[in-house]
Length: 255
Image 1 (cartoon, one colour):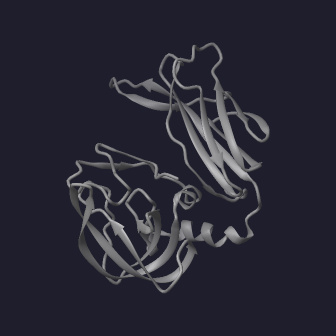
Image 2 (cartoon, one colour):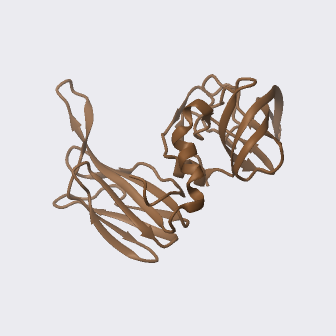
Image 3 (cartoon, helix red, strand yellow):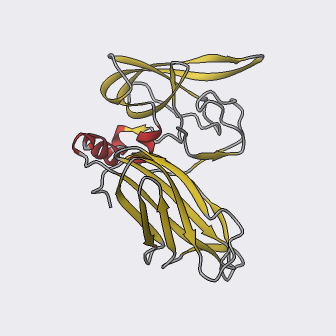
C-alpha cells in the first residue's frame, strides 16, 4: 500500500528520502485510510533519537532513527520497544519526534524496517482522539467495505482565480464483486457501504459533457476497508482528473 502525498521531489521509500528535498505537501486522509496503508500502528513514547546514514547503492543520505517504548499496539508491532526511521525534516516529509513525548505512529515497512513521515497521519497523542476512537472500535466494527468520494467543478471567481464547486446529481457506478449505482448529493459527495471485499471500478457519468480525462478509477478494498476517490471537472464540465485513492479499514457507522 502507499502513502497519499505529493512532493516536489520523489520521497523514496517513505522515510528514506533525500535530506535536501525542496518541499513536501501531504493529502489529508481519514484514520481508516491511514490504518489500511500502514504496516504498523502503535502508541509509543520516545526514548531516544539519533542520526544515521542510509546507503542506497552509491548514494548516501542522512535520516533519523527513533526508538520508542510501546504503550499499546494496534497492528504490526510486538515487544516493548520499536525503532522507526524518518527523514530529517525541513521539507523532506520527516516527522519531528520530541524525546519523552507520546505519539500515535503509523509506520510503513520495507525490508523488515519501519519508517514514518508527516504524510502518514503520525501525530502526538494529544491530537489523536479521532484516530484512537476509530482504532479501538475496530474489534466490534461491522463487516463490509466502503467506497466514497466527491465530484467538484473548477469555477472562476471575480479575482480571476478558481474555486471548487460541488456537483450534485452526477451518476456514479461502482462495479466489482457486486454492482451499485448512486448519485452525488448536494455536497457533491457519494458513499456506498456494505460492499464485499475486492477490486472495484468507480465510474462517473457527466450528462451533456464530453469526457476528456479519466472517467473511472480502479480501487481495491478489504473487509472493513475504505477507498476514497475525487473527480474534478474543469469550468466547461469536462472531466479532467481523478485526484486521489486510498484504502483502509473503516466502520459503517462513520459519517
